[in-house]
Image 1: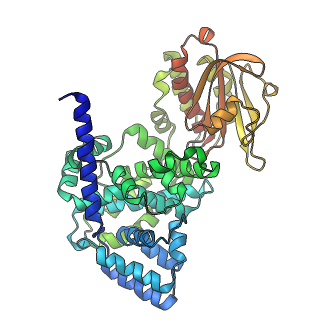
Image 2 (image 1 turned 120 degrees about the horizontal axis):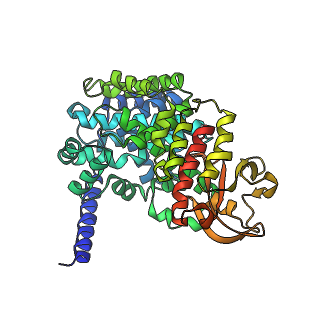
Image 3 (image 1 turned 90 degrees about the horizontal axis):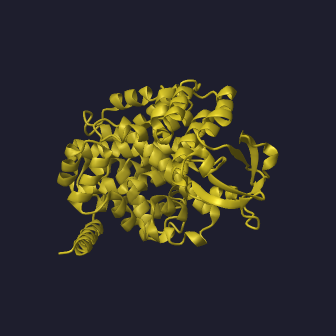
Length: 484
């Protein structure tokens, strides 16, 4: 059998296995705390609706939280609404029906849960709460981020209950996060992400959530999607991924991501929460959410260790940011040495002018980019304004760019709209022929564009290396300016 035919057969088997799993889910759901359902029913009876306290209790149980959202989807109550707003809009009778629906579909009981199944719940809540705090820094509705984070982890949670033996086998044999994901795919036949998307693609979720989860149906419609939807969806995706990496490391007994991925996530979370005080507050909030699960197996949900792990992550230092910048290795040896030394001078959350000056006047030009500019977004006017000239450039060499103006295309506008850094060689810009690399700055919330010009002959490196060098320098700029 040819390799092509084997790939086709493997894909067909995966699709059949995925279909069987979806059929199983037609009549069952994640276990829920039945006592909590009764408490919520009593609260609805007395209040007549979903209060803020009701939502907070609902969030503490993934089975009930996602079960209610599933009920809303089946009744066509979501209608592109934010899930929690849709829940709050329910009348008393519908809310009671949604809670009873969770009891009817619940598969097994939490008292039968294995340690690893409870750990998955803890990781999910840790990521969701963390993503909510990250959202507050970026003017994104925190409740939207919470629900998106939970839904993005739904596939993994379901697999841990539908296929506990295989899930545990993958968990016990995994050396790290990557090998764990590879084992799941191999043992089950499909990825947790594929299961989640297949399940919720017809739920009527708002397009921002579908975009963030990687729903191919919505991605294929990108050309017709509103720019704001794409912007929020992209930010949601990045926020949730950052929070999940952070949660995987601080959750005891869970496979850890690579050191580079974790250091990047840890630095972003620490910056967003304001360091040690903010992270302690985060630990307390996660503890409150996980309390109900911990009663089933205090040993499995090691809250004390979780708190300790989170508090330890509150100690950012320049060396951790250096580790997170995985592109430094693509710089020439001397420039890599200089940038490594420069990282040691970074001042935590404080922006030091001398560090910025050294980066734009010495390090970037010596890396082969002799000209360029940092454009920052003026949110009131939707204008990208030139703020810092790089190398031999002057601010007067560049003009402001309106992000919604397509009549005058420019590299800065192209970069702002692109999902990753872009490069062009020998193109005309500002009445001269140049080669450039450009990309947005701010890993989660776009705050501007870094635009760098290079001459392949003068710089001594081919265009194929330009983007890799650019990414190392952009990461350094974001670290220097405390952008996340």
